[in-house]
Amino acid sequence: MTRSILRQIFRDHWESFQPKLSSLVPEAMVDVINEVVEKMLGCRDPEQGYYEYRCLKCGYRKTVAMTCKSRFCPSCGKVYVDRWVEGVVKEVIDVTHRHVVLTIPAQLRAVIYQRRELLAVMMEVAAQTVREVIESQRAGLSADRQAWNRPSWR
Image 1 (cartoon, rainbow, N blue to C red):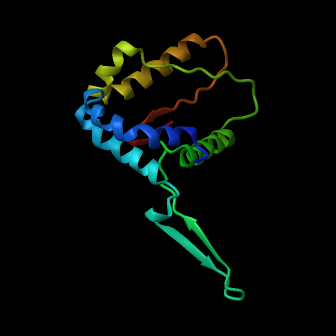
Image 2 (cartoon, rainbow, N blue to C red):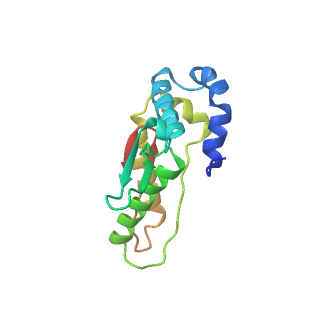
């Protein structure tokens, strides 16, 4: 059994779900989604590649499977999140803060899928809205947009 419940769910159901994917997302995203899921499923699988370390004195061997380095992967994605948090912590002084999460309404998701460039516009509008709400306060803002196949925007 794998340590990741998400990975296990994909292992158990991806093969039957995959044919339905193109009816649920824009065609342009199907290849990207397939790629990240396949990477995640092969993460830490020695058949996908591994390093072997050997002690020159006693001959002990240690095999370490390669990772996928995908942000979608539960274990590799945590590395990205930890690095992002570390960077933010270095930039932010120790002050009281609030975490605000803005989501895309379900009615707009299909439009955003079709016109990905609108994400940047939405991020700017969201940031401006938060700035206006907290205008009377002395505040800073850190924003992050996550997309399947692009680096984080901060």
